[in-house]
Amino acid sequence: MAIAPKLQQRQTQSLVMTPQLQQAIKLLQLSNIELAAFVEEQLESNPLLERGTGDENRREEAAAARVALEEFKEVNMDAPNAAAESLDAPDHVIHEQSSSADIAADVGGAVDWSKAGSGGSFTSSSDFNPMDNVEAEITLRAHLTEQLGIDIKDDKERLIGTYLIDHVDENGYLRMTIEEAAERLNVSTARVQSVLTQLQTFEPTGVFSRDLKECLSLQLRDKNELDKPMQVLLDNLQLLAKHDLGKLMKLCDISKDALVEKITILKSLAPKPGLAFGGEVAAAIEPDVAIRETPQGGWAVELNSDTLPRVLINNRYFAEICGPNADEATKTFMTECQQNASWLVKSLDQRARTILKVATEIVRQQDGFFAYGIDNMRPLNLKTVAEAIDMHESTVSRVTSNKYMNTPRGLFEFKYFFTSGISSLDGGDDISAEAVRHKIKILIDEETDGKVKSDDKIVKMLRSQGIDVARRTVAKYRESLGIPSSVERRRILKHKSA
Image (cartoon, rainbow, N blue to C red; front, side, top):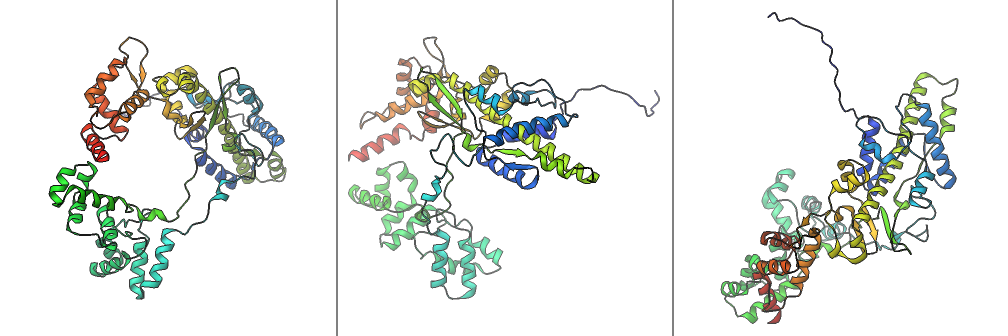
């Protein structure tokens, strides 16, 4: 058979994701904080995008989006339908979306898609800013730097000290070795150790430690409490964590009363001395949706409009720049900007619709939890929700990442409501793993000295309640709750009652 080059035609099918679809998917999985940052970047880079300020601008936004869509005929459009479903399309087509008024009809009221300058669904006053109530505190780094300037006079040692301060974490621990610092600064380890010894005398006592043992040792030495038994106790902190007082008494060679006294001293120390000083204020979690009970006994699911950025497309500016006298480069650039702006508006609308749709189905599936509590939580997975709302499972997975709902029972992440199921002995519905964990915690919380329940005992008690669960499952759930074994719990209870 002769080998020769040939030309062949083949017809194949492949999944093509346009940049616009990639953007829609990206926005879907962003948290509200990340979304706000992304929109800010777009506002700075796209001259046609403007920040919305009111209802009239929202109407202009919807009109501008429709005009832009009509102008770009090269984009394939289907009949208008639920925009959230377009993420599940088998090809690169993204369907045209409804306006904000249509979405408002879906939820039974006006929906503001963005963070407005006035009003909002979660705050009574637009002038309220929780950060105004946060008192400015001196940071740990500033406090250490101030002491460095006073206590260390040598310029080179002060530079070494500054470098080490830059590698102290918020807890007050030094997160690098002496050898690493010496190598990077091209000085001897002895000189770094000398500076570190001086730094470890700074306030708060215990800073610049490399581990918990050193941190506690510095504080005990400062209190003149670091004797031999205390040093042995520090060398065996793992036994203290297990409340194995018998072994500790033998190792320290002291009586039980003396050991309890030293443990009391240890408990008075600060394992994370750096936390006594200010740092960056943790960002508060803002819910994406709110759940409230209706007078009819059902549940209303509402988007938190305060977390949704509002953007408008300035078509007048586009028409002005792309007038008869505009060159081709300008027209090409502005056309691209208009297309990107149009897709951003669509994507934000699409994201809001999808979040609302998924949240509504979660509430429907977990109605028992909202009405009666965690014991009535149902097993739920992504596939069940995806099939119920006719979306792809991966879309639901993206929606539930970093999204929160404010409910009458507290603030919960969407993923909290997705749990596996435990079989029921009576043949009824499966029981949520989260509900089983809650039952295990209640059984252990009821324990008293002399009546500590082993994992096997908990298995029998759960089976008496109709829950078919294995011992290893009980142990896994107990450990996930941070609850020690029955042996360690017995020691703890004996220590408390002593």
